[in-house]
Image 1 (cartoon, helix red, strand yellow):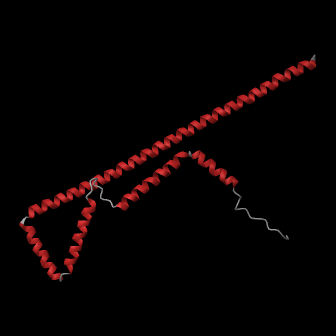
Image 2 (cartoon, helix red, strand yellow; image 1 turned 180 degrees about the horizontal axis):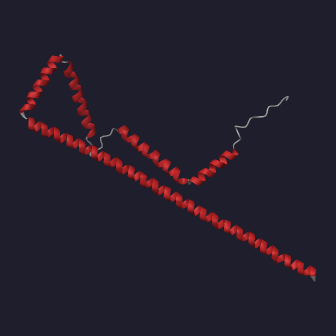
Image 3 (cartoon, helix red, strand yellow; image 1 turned 120 degrees about the vertical axis):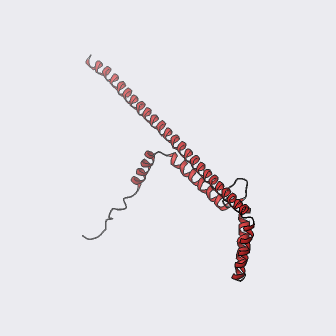
Length: 188
């Protein structure tokens, strides 16, 4: 009787051991699922933050352009008001300039002509409907910087700090220990 009873007791112990192992695996699985959900939530937050920063940057750039455009407009208005007030005085100033040109020997005249051509070219390039006075290269540069920033923000949002640290630790553990002094064969 004792032999049969001992075998019967062993079966429930094995079953409870398997059950405990199964429960432990389920607990670990739940923990892993929670960790993954938390990481996904952190990634989404990082993406939202990156998007918010990009929008803020765009708004700041737009505000800077608007302010620059307003300043230029005010400057033009002041210039026109000054010319209107001068009236006859403006003609006298022109005569004085022509006297100074003669005193300079005509060399100053060519410099002023080239500077007026430059101003004309500048106004042609700066008069677009959007009010953006940047050159084509500046616009391309800003677009490239924006693309690079967005790409870096996406890369940063893909992994949490914990993942990055774990990946780095794994990399270090796989590396040989370069600082060790190699053994030297030979007499000693």
